[in-house]
Image (cartoon, rainbow, N blue to C red; front, top):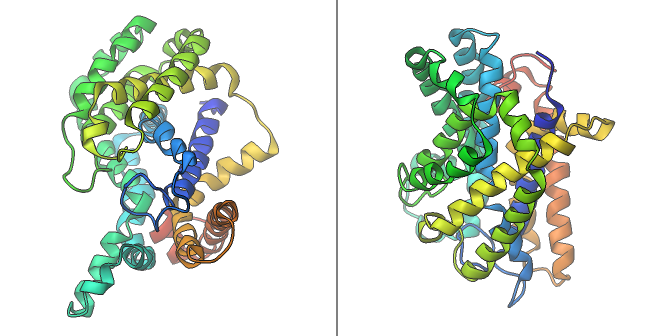
Length: 355
């Protein structure tokens, strides 16, 4: 099957947005836990967090569902599970033990956790650091679970529902907002709010069943302009309504406005990129190759940089720029180094052979 360039471009652009999000988040003043603290009394740049958080990871799960369909069209279930286990489960488990504890150390330093853990035995403290160092790996943990469930679903569904979904029209795609809203209310893990099994599982399944069909994407593509306009209006409304509240709390995430915005934004990005995102150039190809490693490793240099420069008497804009540079350069450098070491590239990147 010929690679769909717009899908590749959606993936690396979304990873780039994840990095931007984390750079703003680490200095957030919204009350969302995990950052080192705000840099200014009023931070209008925090609007980026409100504009991205409701939809960008949902988009990644939808695209992942699409890619699962493309892969399974020419591979067996056994090959799919083997590939997904090496690529997803290994880095999100062994990788945390080998490397993630370092990020956990900085996360706990940032949160002041060590101040109350003087009496905790060292082995227990290491386990806590590993868990705290999961960071962005929660996405690939959920993705592995959804991949396993998908193979069970396929044995039952036998492509009957998928064939029906190929007829999905734009009004039906819009009506799926109700499904997304309903899914957002279930399968949410307490405290660790990123583990939203309901909405992300729904996005993954819809990617597999609906958006993997070229005819559906062709219909969606035609509505790129009104969908983009609607997404921008909804994003502005969402930011205005919930400004000052913790955007990552369920009192915000589970609201109708948040979920309408999230789904329309996903549809808008898919439509826009199907229409305009099929470009191919040297930078896009480089980002396609590096985006996996950038996603895996950007947060450690980002958190370390933010922790050490937070109290320095330098302009806030410079702190953002230094943190962003550390995230990108550090993430790519770590990936390039680790991907050259056989054992490490397997347990931390899910790569069996050097690419």
